Length: 552
Image (cartoon, rainbow, N blue to C red; front, side, top):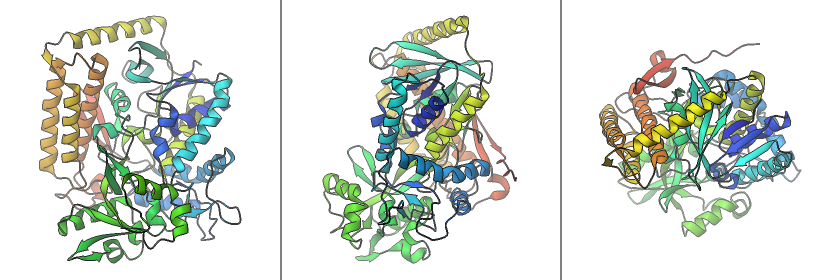
């Protein structure tokens, strides 16, 4: 089989490439930036596995239940079962590759609490676990690059997926960001491009994650699922045009949230949720934080780490402590840190089965760009795990599914002609469009209608605004940006519209999706997957049953 092309070179993409290489299958990693700049590097808190090194009686079954409960029973139980059963081996493999996990005095992997978990289950490397994991995977990938089984195409991005009929992906067109030249990659592909941060602008994610790769797949016919499920992290801080994450590890080590009520500190999570306190699932903490700030007339809550042992701050939260000192100009050991919920993770994405196949034969997806494992709300500590295990699972599926659709020479020639014609049609438009201005307006619309609290009026207003913005973009051209960027923007607008329409269609509150006009969970009608499909130039939303768990 030809080389498998992988869009994205973070943990999901690297995990897939390494798995393929170990089986003798060549792959090409296509990424807009080198792996060291992937969003995966920014993961802070840790990675989950029921290792039970603390003697609390933790188990894979409890990890499974916590994951399903946090996801409000919207995840595929078969996929979650495989994830939680494979977690321990994922962590042990990372340790063997050299990830410098914190360890106990006896040498066992140290574990800590994370939100939504009743046992210490999260292995960590201070508060920079993602950086450590990426360093180990990059080093391992270099061995296979030297053998020719992994090739890289940095500073490239996918602009279009090539299809045959209604449900086959036969390749893609990628653009060299330096030379602006295009190239066709034929054969099987895996999308591992991360979250949809660029649609919203101010998130905790990497600014280069524009969402364009997933949007292009949606435009090509791949269905998306649960796009309305957007996780707001309770503790983020404003810095230089984005939100900075203050890891949940801070609360796992004893950090406490409060607001000032009549001049007195109110530790609201401890009063309202006495069992798990500050370690309730993220959707709960974010909603409570937004509500108490509104109630008390404040624009921020506070994260209090002054009661945490100094040794814990320096050794287990050393990176977070240094970040606060350098970028927020506050010493967390002496004064509280101002925080407020910010967009952090996208549970929804390309609709995949438990084996990570999308609805287009020949195209797979893993990591945050795929709708898998997390349901309506991701359990803290499951993101790195889901990306690594997802990349591994997708690669194993690809190896099983061979042979897959590929393009013949005539199809490749036709695809190149069609792309040139599309670019020419965009260049022939007479009206002027500013892609930068449209992107800013897109961000404003989505932040307005897809906040922590949603309602029909704002969702309908947002959908109408997106429709008008789409008409404006499709009627004009941005001569400086170029046709490829404008085509990507049109795809992003289509995906954004699907997100808003998914939120409008789900008339209940569940996990990260909270409707003030439908505040209750409605299992009878909505314990189903929201599926968005591109249909006749518009969006088609349906609700499809969640797979039943297969019993041995």
